[in-house]
Image: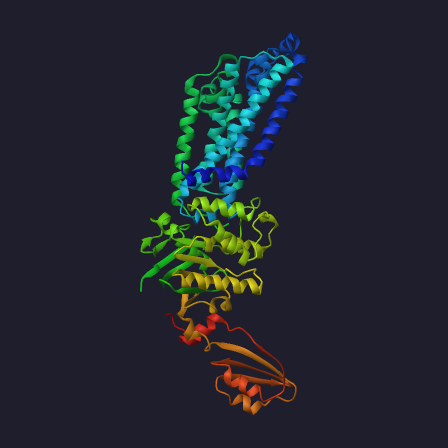
Length: 268
Length: 297
């Protein structure tokens, strides 16, 4: 990698380091706070029995099945909704902040006035945001494994790793979507709003369509379903789930790079 | 002479608004070209087309003989740009920012960086968010002059600088020209351009309304003159002076419009008791329109 290519990634990484630190602190706090209560729920059949009185669609929508088991507890409290959506927020805000916000604020102009290709500048920022996401996810994983040991929560490490990796590719997908929007139209509120809202919508499709047998098959169109529908904490993950999200992400990034090469740069 | 910048019927529209219209410009190698006009005239649009940040709606723009749309990277390798708007990364220090740009350009001479910072009295180690607009201006000037580029594109380069630093900036600009660089100097301030430009074009509403050499212009532009005498003004002698029009006397105050050299007026005033005198900077657009009879070049 040349010093130019390195700088196109390292420069944005330097400016997002505070955000990465704060997201990592937040994730660690979330995991610690959730796991602290595990001893209360450990092996509790009462709560599971009570929850089992809810309609099966509600249990599935919120990942509440088998709440008293280690994987059920982590799924319901962290990995069904909260962690995936937070990692999506990390990806979308980092990539939106480094592309649309910087361009709309006029801070990209001096970089783009240098002998560098515009798509290379944007791609460097996408890679930097992806690295930021990986760092936050790594801290989350370390916090999870450490807290599992502290509160004695037995979980299959392979399944945990698969789940977090699926969360990462899901966040990468929506980060790539935000990137493509930023490349086409550098409006920060649109980029960040659309990225997060579409992620929430894709979760809602999975959660609500499961109540209707007519709609339920359509939920498989949702990227959220590709990532997490198979309950990876309990059963691990199929390879196609990673591939589908990774390939879609690459396509979105390529579409974005094509768009940014062809349009005017905002004056700021 | 070799044309370094050449635009042919360059047009850039923003929806229904037009940035520049059928702009024809030629900047020759080794000259300082003043690009003058009020805010919103289309100067920045032209520069952003030149840098490849905007795609022209119609027409063409060539820099170093290369197409600005297709050959942006080789063009930008040979030019340096100091923007008028100072939107810089807030958290970086000037040194960090310069290093970042340096890595994109294949390296800057650190000794030269320090020398430029010293001449412009810029503290390289303070975060950008703590810098005044004048000091931010110095950061972009250091960057522009560090690149040893064949073409310098400077947008309002002395804005926010104190008079001493303005002079230093002009000196740096002259040194760059003496070293063989071509300078495209965009400004809405005539005096900024007047000090260094060889040729000038005046832009209004996206169109060049006048152009010519600075030598043509200097000394022939119309200025508003105001003189306060300690006694009654020598009205008859003043009105007889060549180049003074629209004379008006109110008490001890004399006003007129002067076109042409100021020497005869100063000679006359030296023979009288003058309390104060004010010569306003000429309106550059009017001055050029006068010079060229109001027609396009």
